[in-house]
Image (cartoon, rainbow, N blue to C red; front, side, top):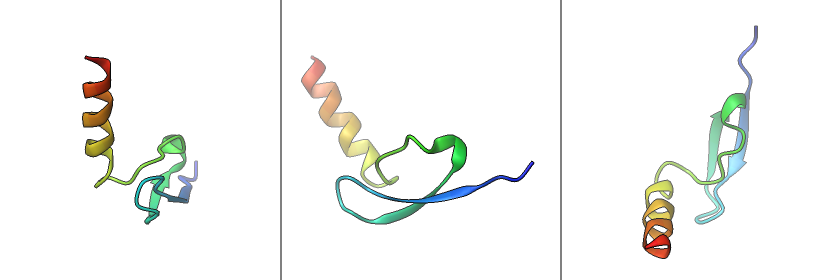
Length: 45
């Protein structure tokens, strides 16, 4: 089976990044993902 890759744009910094098709729901690049996780953690508690 062929493993496809998708080019996406980060919602926070608008940087292009490539993800595998199975990670197609990913909306943030690897640099911005920890920032979003930290914000969500603070909002929940």
